[in-house]
Length: 125
Image (cartoon, rainbow, N blue to C red; front, top):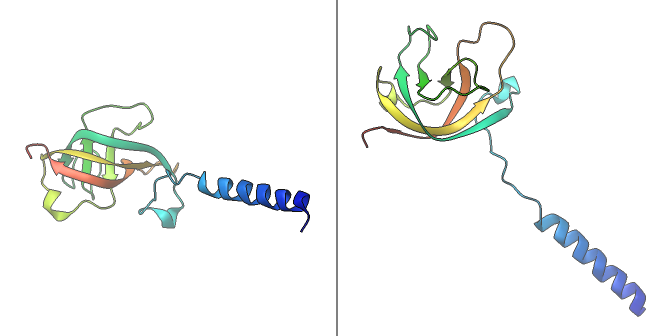
């Protein structure tokens, strides 16, 4: 092989290797609402909220987390988690949670922002 050709192959190898290794996999891996094709619009870390049982002022059929922090890109003000474990289904419990907020469906019937819990604990723990 000619030295020039060898250098071209070498630099091509470096370019391809750099391209592959420089790709970041920092995007969250959604686990909920995929059947609806919803995208994650926000990541929450260590926020405080109150669990509200079905029949609450937000959603009549679902548990929600009423956030103690009002954020502009969450216009509904409460979160409907897709994966709230039964041990946290306690009306009035204050929790610290992290997770993903999903985009809204513009059908007018959505009572809370779609949410996937990645971490949750009672506030007193």
